[in-house]
Image (cartoon, rainbow, N blue to C red; front, side):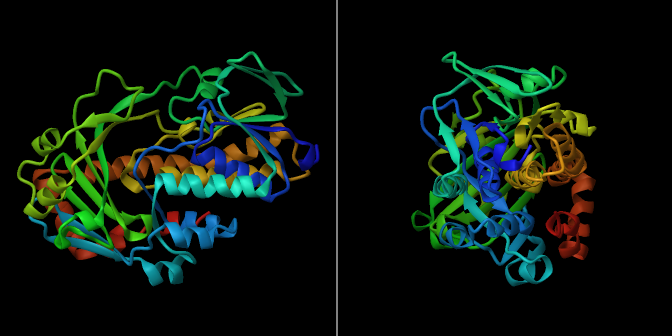
Length: 394
């Protein structure tokens, strides 16, 4: 079927769904996007976009808007959360451009979402259908039929589930994958830099590594705000579905006993925290877990990952580029296109999942393991922090 005649239905209006709609539109393919919320919105805090992702966004013509909204830190530094000693650092900025052909960016999640939404609307090829909660999906040899909660039925050539960790699309194609608590809790906040003492303001990315916790801070909103996240090991909340819980500083400070004064001061300067229990799925084991006939999964719907490699948003944007590429290939039928997408993406996503989990163990090490980590970081900091297989692809 020619690309222009394909009926592409995207479920989910977050970063992944909008990235896919934009990538399809740029290849001349119209799409329908259904979103269960009545208005487009994006909650959360900050997002790191490494060169592999920034290259894609710039290729989609978003470089100028990215310049206006994002920050491009010159340095990533790693410090001991207990002593504040510098353990290692990685030059970004011009080095990232020279080595990988693109910059390393940090951006507020809401800014990235709005950037993509504006670009989709400017393209004019995507029908955005709000307040359309998915109810049923069925497929046959020729099409997929989707029924929304209002009883409306739509037929499509392919359906792409971009509806996140608690994906309703996934429920219809995989019965073996239910989200489970990872053992990690994320406290997140954004604060105006002008509201912070001068010593706490920052233009670089800083990771603080401590026993059973770590923290990351970096600028967003063009440098006007500081994003702060502290991830600790803890018990699962009673309700895993609602990830945005009100959290207070006292709870967090219990986890940070013994932390360096600079980190304690930063945490104490934040007046409002939000709490996310970090949930996930078993790591991908084959392409069959991403494509099911005329239905495919992308982003957190197919391969959620822990944030210890800062690639959640990045991998879903890569998925979008891959899907648009195969769906626009004239020689491929719909089912074959989704199979090719799954084959192209599952190993890379599985590798990122595994590396992120491994990083979590390293970041939160204690005792002799932490000592060995710190020694290795001091000796080989840049080599350990750089990730060429990730940043140079796809």
